Length: 211
Image (cartoon, rainbow, N blue to C red):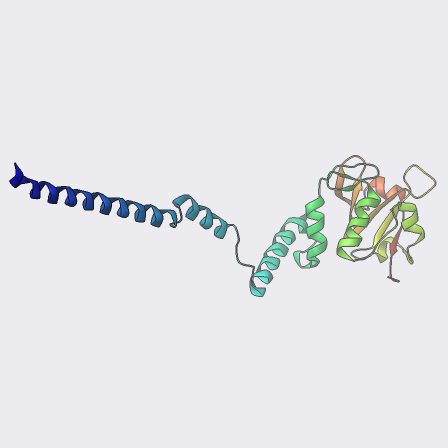
């Protein structure tokens, strides 16, 4: 029995060293895994990268504007009984397109609802960088030039007396007798000055030149 003791002692030492080696390896592996990014983290990073596209180059921006203008020409030329080349003001027709169909709301000037002077003021502020008075009658009184129907050009104002002595309605002239406005019955819409209703109540056009 005494002869086996050295072997038992050696086996005990070997087992102890093996167990320690496995423990150290396990700790090192856990530490290395702790510093590795998870698959979910990698996926999140990739999604973030995809959601942040590079800004468009000047050439790409020009192409986008050309495509937008081509779309607006195709859409609005028939509505205005005009040639596509007559439609050149991208900012004007883009705004008109965004607001078309907006419901009428007295005192409103948002896309949830707008009245005629509110919508006209939005066009002048965003397209022509001109601030208008809030009421149609006040816009009329502050307009520099009063125009006849045949003198109207794109962007001019058109005024109407509808059912009142005081001027009560305003819109923005486009081309070929057509104007855009916020109608009490249809909201933002394009109408024709030669329609019986508007022909009856039309007072004059207006042009602002001193701003």
